[in-house]
Each structure stands twice: as C-alpha cells, then as structure tokens.
Image 1 (tube, rainbow, N blue to C red):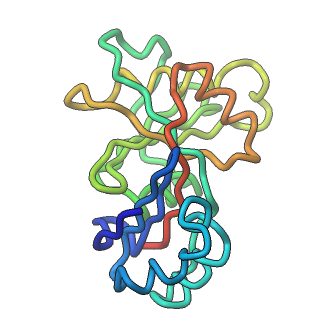
Image 2: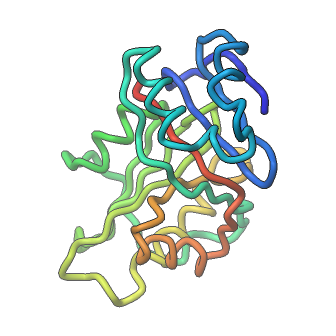
Length: 187
C-alpha cells in the first residue's frame, strides 16, 4: 500500500488492484497504516477505511467503482456523433470531477458521451443512453467510439459501479479491460 498526496481533481481517491492499493489523500501515512493494519490487502477499499477517511477530510466518498482502461484506436468513431452543450446530470457530474470536458450526442439525442481529464490527468469517459433506446447496443457503440476521440492517442479510462451490469457489459464489449477498483472523494 502506498500513501500519496491528494491528486488534482479530487479531495482523495483510494484505488487498488491485485495485491496493491494507493491512498491519495492529504493525511498522515502512519494514520492510514494504522487503519488498515489488520488486513492491508482488503481494508483500503473497505467501508471502515473509506468512512474513517471521509470523516478525517470532511468529504463523503463515492461508491467503489470498477476501473477499466482501453487503448486508443486510430479509426474514426464509427458512430454519428455531434459536439454539443447539454444540460444533463451526466454532464454536471463530469464537470464536477473532470477538466477539459468535451460532450457529444447522437443526432437523435438518445446517446450522450463525455470525455474529460479526471484523476491524475487521465482521460475518462462516461456515457448515458436514453431509457427508450436501451438494449440495442448504443451504449457499447458509444464507449467504442470514445476510444477514437481521445486526444494525443493515450489510453481511455472509465469507472463503472459494479451493480450497473449493462454499463459494465458495454465497456467490456467495446474492448475495455478491468484493472482495479477505486473510490473517488468529492472535489
């Protein structure tokens, strides 16, 4: 387990994978070590540490999300997308946690895609599909298209709540691979 200062764009983030964790928060590393001492492999993303950290820094943690990553692709998006400015909860969340946010919609307005720089400057994607358009592959098409929209040809990251199985299937189907889990504390 590694303890680092809070990254830009968040008050804290706890991220982990197979036998590793990073707690990025402006707290004493000895305090973190004491909190996870009984089980340093499981406790960093456990409810007790997340609650204690929230109390310590005064910001509620987000859910524990699956973190996925995909390499960029050179081909165009393969989906008709229009740059847009949209008043939508997904956009509001992107603007809260990311910088350099870019928004696209499908011409019929049934699909929404946001790209922006999130934790540690990584490019992150989020999508929303209108309930009437779900179940037809639009979510998978959106997250696949996002891979060609990333500037600088860098990997694209996504965070998905594990209970959101439709979204998780879309990302996996579009070539994203799970690399860990994280809980993001508010900006």
